[in-house]
Structure formats: structure tokens, C-alpha cells
View 1 (cartoon, rainbow, N blue to C red):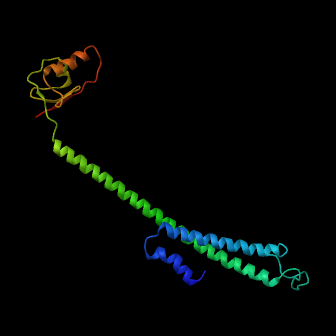
View 2 (view 1 turned 60 degrees about the horizontal axis):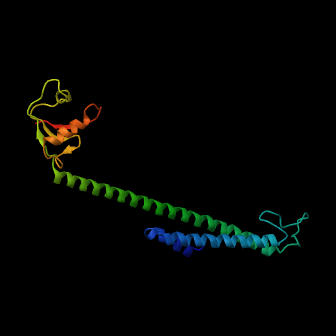
View 3 (view 1 turned 30 degrees about the vertical axis):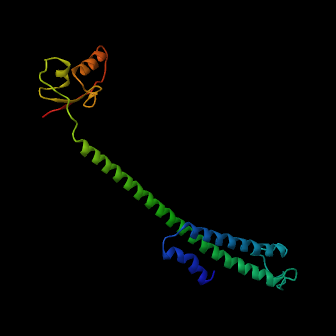
Length: 197
């Protein structure tokens, strides 16, 4: 790989953010190198199946006459150079993919943080606009031993919710009586929220 090619393929990642098209270009270069390596191995195969390590001299030490030595040596040299180029391109691909994934991970984390912050500000805005829950009733008296007494209600406690009754649907004490009547004889978890002052 020439210095100019190295600058072109590696320069894009150094100059700025790596893009998907940069990775695709590196992958195209990798496939091109692999095709050249295969072509050179085909040349070796066409020379009596000689590979990268078979001797080019006969048993007496003379150059082999059954193969084209120039073609074999050139193919071997090209394969070694191309394998080095392949390693370099694969390293660039790996670095580019790491940068792409790291950038995506950072973007995802930023998006999640922004969404969380927006949700919190929206929630905070709603709770500020709503303020504390409004009471719809105030306890005037408690009978000793009554369910209200057992529940811990005290005089002057304000009721903001009693079962399904709250500020939005409370019309009269008959609403509370209705909830109690429907709950008689049942083991229920009617929630009475109290606000003490």
C-alpha cells in the first residue's frame, strides 16, 4: 500500500468523525486486496501446485525447470506485500468501527439523558402547577376504638383521598358513606391519606 493510499484511507478517520461511507470504502479496499491475493495464489497453483514454501531448486541444487521461477517469485512477493496491506486495512476497519460504535453509544447516552431530563422537568412542571393535593374534608372528631381511630386519624387531619373518593369526584359525605357501605364485611385495603398540620 502506498503512502498516498494510506493517507486517503486513514486520513478520513484522523481528519474528523468516521462515517459509514468511510468504513464501506475500507471494506471495498479489503475485498480488492483479498481478490489480488487469491489471483496470486492461483498463479502459484498453476505452476504445478507450488505454494509459498516449496523449494525452487531441485535435489541437486539447480533451479527447477518445470516451473516459471520468475512468475513464482513475483507471485510470492506480491502475496507477502498484499497480506501486509490486508493487515493494515483490517486495522483501519477495526478502528473505524470502534469509533462509529463509540459515537453511536455516546449519542444514545446523550439522547437518554436529554429524554430523562425532559421527563423530569415536565414532571416537575406538572407537580409545581398542581401543588400539594387539595383536601376535600377535615376531621372534626374521632370515636375511640373506631376504624378511623385504629387507622391513626386525629382531629383536624385533612382528607385528600378516601378509597376512590378524591378532590375531583367528591360531592358530599354520601360519597364516603357509599365507599364504606360497599366495603362492609370485606377485607379491603381502602387507603385514607391523611395530612396533619
